[in-house]
Every structure is written in C-alpha cells, then in structure tokens.
Image (cartoon, rainbow, N blue to C red; front, side):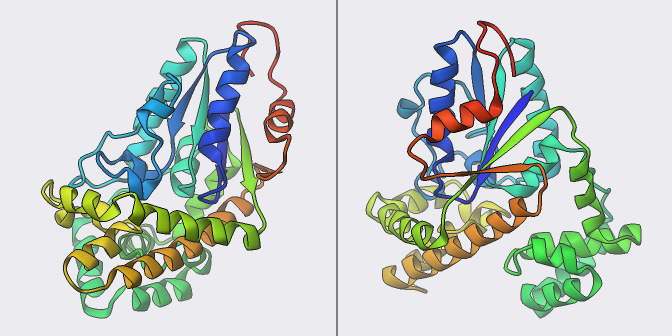
Length: 311
C-alpha cells in the first residue's frame, strides 16, 4: 500500500508525514517520504517552496527533493518514471512509501494509470508561437472552448501547460482531459488522505507564510539562483514567489508589490489544489486543525500494528 498526503499548501502535510513515520516506527514499521511538490524538485529553491531543512527531517529518508537544476524542465511524465522507481525501491525494503505534496498532476501521474501522449515538435512550436503572440490568457480561453474540463484544471497563467493541452488535443483528436479519467484506475493500491482547512483560516496562514519568506531571505535566495541560471529555467523561473522576486530584483516591482502578488497567486493556487483533489473520488478528507489529527489519520489508514507489517 502507498499512502499519499495531499491538499492545499500550508495545511501541514510535511509535519503530519513526519509524525506518522515516528508513530509507525514505534510499532516496528518503517516508512519513507516521497516528495510530490514539483518545485521542491529543484536544488536551491528552499525558502519559496517551504522545503523542510535536512536538519528538521528527523533522519527520515526523503526522496525526489533537490534532484533538478533550475535550468532543467520539470515534467509530470519524467516524475512518473522516477517516482515509481523510488516507490518500488522503498517497498522492496519492506517500508511504506508516504507521498507528500500538493502538485495534483504529479500525484495523479504517480498513483494512477495516467498516460502521457507523445509530442509533436511542429505543433508545439506553433502553439508556443501563439503563446508569445497572444498570451496565456487568450490561449486559455481557447482551451476552455475546446476542453472546458482541462481549462478548469489548468491555471491560465501557466502558459506551458496550456500549450501542452492544446498540442495534445491537436495531436490525438481527443480532449486533453481524457487523460484525467485515468485517475479511476490505480497504478498500485493506495490511500489518499487530503488535509482540509476552512478558507477563512487558511488564507491568513498563507499570507503570513509569504511575508515570512521575504523576511527569511527570499530575495537573497533568488539572487543566488540567478547565478545558476534561474532566469533561463523554463519551469523554475515561473514558480510562484520566484517570478515575483526576479521582478523585484529587476526593478520592475517594489518589495511590497512582489509580496502582494505572491500572496494573491498563492491563495489562487491553494484554491485550485482544493478543487483538483476535491474532484478526485480517492481523496479521504480530514480536518487539518483537528487536535487528534495524527491519531485520526493513523486509525483511518488502519495500519496493522504488528511489527514489520505493511498497510
């Protein structure tokens, strides 16, 4: 069995995963954590992704963190291959894989029979030209006409994913969202626990988190990453917070403007995360603010308490 902890950013998934590992270890059950946050794949992108420092991981193995340079392109297709290899390796050691993260497409790619169509260089180039000419919002409106479900799942600002969806539609003659149906077929048995928090309580936490990022040295982190090619990165430079910090460094935004835009985009992203996992029938929701959250999730997963057992 694979365990997945999902939900909006800022709901405490990382803390819960470590608490579960510790609780299970007391019963003789080993577990390891597999990252499912697309931006935590990048080396050096720490503050802006709320990446748990090594010293705070309690010696628990964490996989697929810091595996890409900022100049490399992250993709769900690549992640699917690498994460499944990691899962099989963890299970071969008799341990439980705990997938932790809020990147919905990455989670679906790993846990379900999600299949990625091939690519067509000419089609891709044509749509990328349209992206430059018309902008991502215009292309997203076209996607909404051709495939409303896909448009609902893709952020209008994410031009790369909008282009990919339109390319697949032209390439296959089918809606891009047809691939979303694969979520009904598991790759391996899994339980997906979603952490939920009332929006009126989540939003202040997210806003405070963004403020804390800048106070912790977000600008210095981005300045250092520029030397490693951040501005040339296809995926990394567009990450929430990093794009805004780059704008601040370039003199295109004040610090207050960079923080405000990052906070607004973070709130929007959290809403999309809730929507994505909310549409997934596999998600079993729990209250992230429950005082007995650890015990409740442990009971829900019904891990056999015999030493060496696996859920």
